[in-house]
Image (tube, rainbow, N blue to C red; front, side, top):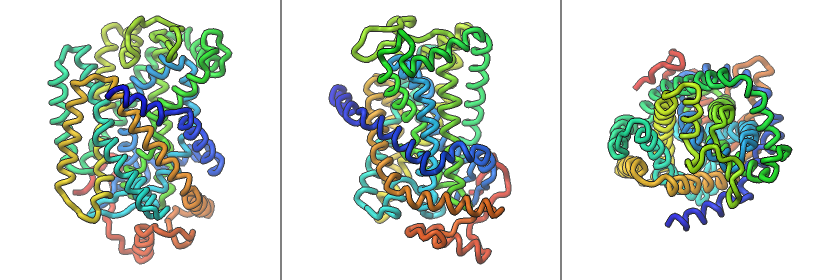
Length: 499
């Protein structure tokens, strides 16, 4: 079974996907005139601007839900494996993928907002929705929905729960089965409460965990201040093959840097589209910009924090696939969270294991919440005609079962399944957003025109000649008539959503 999965992963994660992801990010960056740089200040402003409503979450809550999915095990274990197989240069290519990925995230999240729907009393949207409404290819939309539901509901949860369980077992001796039961109970309380409960939990945990992680990173860097210049020199020289030790693995550095950046920030994979569609905003481009910023937080902040702690302390080994070891500092220890634990312990003895275990718990737990929300959204898309409520109950049970199984099973197969799911979704989503580049650029242009005119942009799809945006057609009529059906909360980012 494991060999078959690994073969499939090799096909999905071929050089083609690495080139495709980089190429798409570069294409979107050029066509949007590098909006991820031009609108950096605007992203931060918009992050705190939107308010929640009876049907939608605030921009900040949608941002936190997306970040909950982005910031997970890939930020700790994924970075370690990138360095272990691609060398220090992989970190540079993670940065490049993050920069280009900001444009990809804008396009996909803007499309999610543009073509979203109101299902019951909640906003729903994402890749299958904008494929059906924008491309009008229902079979393609259904295929994506099936792949996403299987990936987030079945293939990916085990990676997160496995890493939590292993972390607590190594540091506290807690049986993995006990950790699995605890995770299932906590997740059940949240996911049975619906999307608004998920949003309320995410907007409190995500900022806390990211800030705490960065603070510890600065402590480690400050303690190794003399090594910092050499560390950055190593990253850049290894990325371009100048470094004597890592000169022969530039290809591996690029491949692993891109692969783990995509796994971590999922820009172009479509993961951020589902939470983006749930946001209450006056213009689709607003949430597109907010989600572009989440890529920066994930990779340029959290992933970089992990990489710098590992590299500045020298707590890593490098053994490219099929080659002899180049660096053997960690011996036979498998690349993963233990690299970061050992790095922290060099400065704060005895604290590393505990800190990383807690960080893993928060990172992975919030990611699991996001995974369930995405799987539920695509299931709702598939079930929109039959409307069988029991299907959601089955999804919850299967999801929680996979969380438990992941807690007690081997991690290698789980990582392979996760890579298979992410890679498959990346191919499908990138194809879809490339085909829908034109309407996304129309939305961006409309936003820029209104901004230059000194207006707070309000979207009218008929003005820019976009078909299929039925939600926004109705929304614009409501705004014009002053009879918006959704009561908007006047609170800030942390405001509880009215039930």
